[in-house]
Length: 188
Image 1 (cartoon, helix red, strand yellow):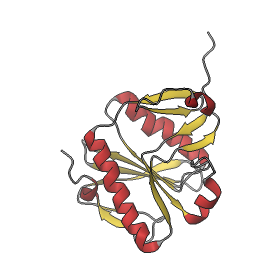
Image 2 (cartoon, helix red, strand yellow):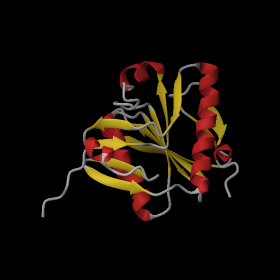
Image 3 (spheres, one colour):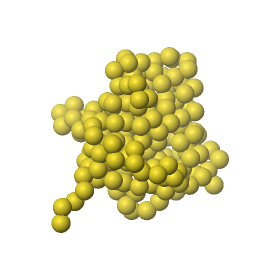
């Protein structure tokens, strides 16, 4: 049996039903409406990045911007940060990025299938497409896993797992620093 290879054009024919549809390497992935804690963590990290960016003016933080790497790689990360220089190249008239932002943040959804997609499938995609740094946020564990591009392999490799009392910083974001606990404010 021949498997279907999904494209960005196929996404346009799917219903606008509040679900998030993504395509990675031609495979369709579906995410249900996010949990309150998921959205709260997204809002908190977006707010922290936005506040830092407002002071520095170096780029832009964005909620689920839509990143179309190719016809068969079309994703919507939870939060991104992109520099002004890269945004000038990546942002096209359709309002989506067509190349990688420097930073991608995903908040893990419950379930092994969802977590495997973020930990493995998306991390490999973001590695191939040039994302410099990848943060995975776990609300139940109240931790942030940080992956950075390895200069030798060019893959996103784990560099740290940070907990509530740790400071989250990045060489991509000069002067950015927050306590990991700030990401989990208002999380029940």
